[in-house]
Structure formats: structure tokens, C-alpha cells
Image: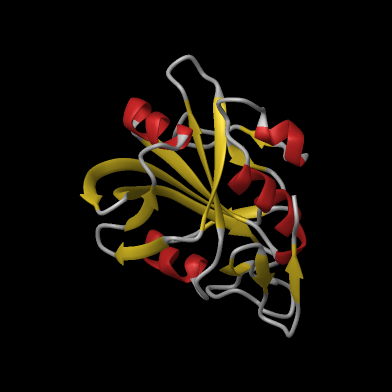
Length: 184
């Protein structure tokens, strides 16, 4: 699957409809980690900012504070089981990439990796953090955005791209009438 760079003013379209993403981080010593996140939102086009909410107890939270960068990886509906593994296991105890069968690739700008199986990637640096209730809201500046040419032509081609949408608990749906319940 070939991917192309896109104009950063289009990054918000990579996040619609609201979908579940895989957030990759890396420790200071180079150990990568991945977290499933559904609490994500674009917050500015110029400059290109997005925000993610992460619980302070999460291993990824520690890595976000430690290195100040992350990658938003956009999976499709067929990766729901792999996403669920990344959301239910801790990177402190297991290699979630190995357990979920996800392929790590080098990002273009940041040290955190991208996930080969995902169709789009938004490379970010943390520019702000807010304590908001039981989560911290990390504001990331998008430094690079690229997407599979097969799936995206200024908007997602919903005939080819089946967005992974988290309904709640262990249930997912997509842009067609289908859902998967995953039990781990």
C-alpha cells in the first residue's frame, strides 16, 4: 500500500468520522508502545493541532511526558481485534505490537514508530497538557500527515476505507451496517 503526503490543512479529514486510533509512543531508551484511543479530536487547522485524552496511570501517559511525541495511526475495521489487544493490555508487561501482530515502521519526523497495517499517520509533538478530571488532555502539533492513496482523495473513500468506530465497551462498528464484539 503506497502512501502520500497531504497538506496539513486537510489533517482533520483523516479523523472523520470520529474513529478509534492507535497512538504510538516511545521511551527515552527507544522502547515503543501502543495505546488504543477513542477520545481524540482535531482542535485547530492552523496551526494543525489535535488532542487526545489519556489516563495518568497508563504506561503511554508516562511515555508522552517522557519524550513529548506520539503518532496517531488510523486503523480500519478489520483491525478491531488488534486494536482491542492494544487497549486492554499494558505495555509495562507485554510487547503489544508482538501480541497484536502489528508491524513497526520508522516515522518520518518523530522517534515514535508508525504501524504499517494502518492507513494513515499523524506525527505529533506535545505542545500542551491539561489535567481534566481523571484524564490528561495532550495537545499535539501535527508535524507530518500521510495516508494510503487507495483510501484517501482529500476525504476518505468510504467504499474502500471502513473506519473503525468504537461504540463502547468491547463493541465496534464501521461506516457500513456491521459490528464486532471482541472478548479477550
